[in-house]
Length: 310
Image (cartoon, rainbow, N blue to C red):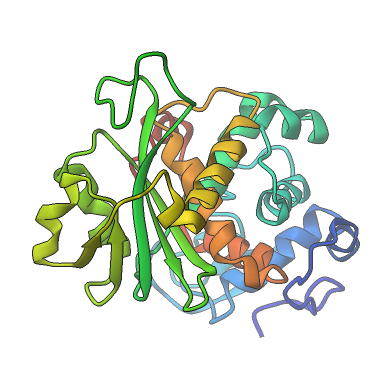
């Protein structure tokens, strides 16, 4: 076995939304490192340097490769790489971001866990990277699509104003046959042209889906590939469920205490949709996020600053 016998090695994946239970099961950094180690090497060890599968676990939940003598920690080559404020704090931040129905600002997190606002912000951005859609499961049933702006109305700006300073976005909402929201994707856009609207279709909507939009001409060129029916919006009355979600997004963004820049807004959209798309899996959403953070490659502050194009 590749886990040495200790009180942390028999842990099952954490389930639930009770933060006190999480603290009880993962009471310190060593317990969190053991949790990471168990997930990371679940299928056995493979050296990231030479590819060898021969090795043994050393103290501190590190793995020693027999072939090239490389020693790898449980956090190496993951989004927990070089977390300096403690793994338990990192786990608790992930837990709050995945289980809370409200937005959490880096100001709040910094005060709560005794770390700087900047440190909290950079780590929270790493968590949001793990929440980005895999694009493996496109919306395939009834889908409503529309655009909106984040930041409220501007004087003299009506409808689709191209010169607005607000962040423009397009949303796709999949509904059940009972008109219940099933899944949601949101993408920041530069303008309302067909060129800007196309990516959300290509990344998140199946060509087999039945798609409804309003009468905006930007959707017309997409009809050659997608099954799109355009109808009057009637101030949102024909797209009631979608506009409720749009209102939720705007309210959620407004509660973030720090400024959300246009170049980072997509990561906030990813966080919102990640949670809403897994609302029926609340018991395991924390564990799923930890898994995603282990699979993802480490990123650094300069990459995050450069618009998160990774």
